[in-house]
Length: 226
Image 1 (cartoon, rainbow, N blue to C red):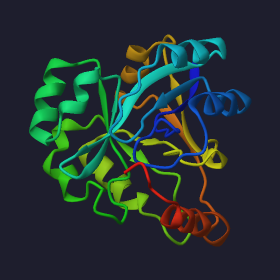
Image 2: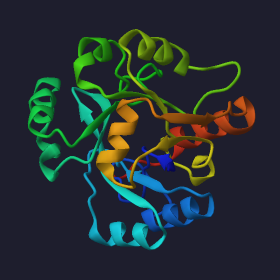
Image 3: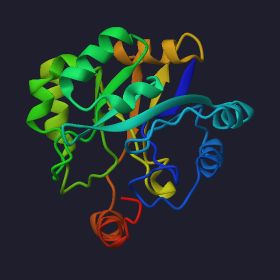
């Protein structure tokens, strides 16, 4: 079966970004758009909420707990860890954690986008840690920082998977993966990703109509949670 999947989502549970919608809001939007699997990946806040899992199940959606963890000042998406993932602060610690937690999936988030938070050279320096590389929704026909990520994914033979890195529900349905799973479970989902059994559904965004307004909004939005 194929699961329409979003593996990178921020909500108002996020302690570092001002997000105007809840996870339940995101689930409702996901259900409306035919998603069957949703992860929650707030910045440095691991969310594994029984209420969220139940709400997802009621909508026919597989819930994947996760976090976008800051590791040595760089962003890494970690899916299905335990709560102690919040104690991991270095790549060496993440390496040790992964050896003890084979049930997790580690994604290189927007690795070559501008900003000190992107992995940049840390991706190649820690290539053994990553199970996949992210293809971000934030690109146009004229500006596309995903291109180098795609080349690196081919060089490292790592899956290159589309996510919406959702901070705005308007973009939830613009960049996602349809994943071929044997059953609707997290282990089956991760196995399919590692084996490249998915199709990315994605298209460039409008530079002036979507990307620029989004960037300006991110720049001026107060970050009182920080």
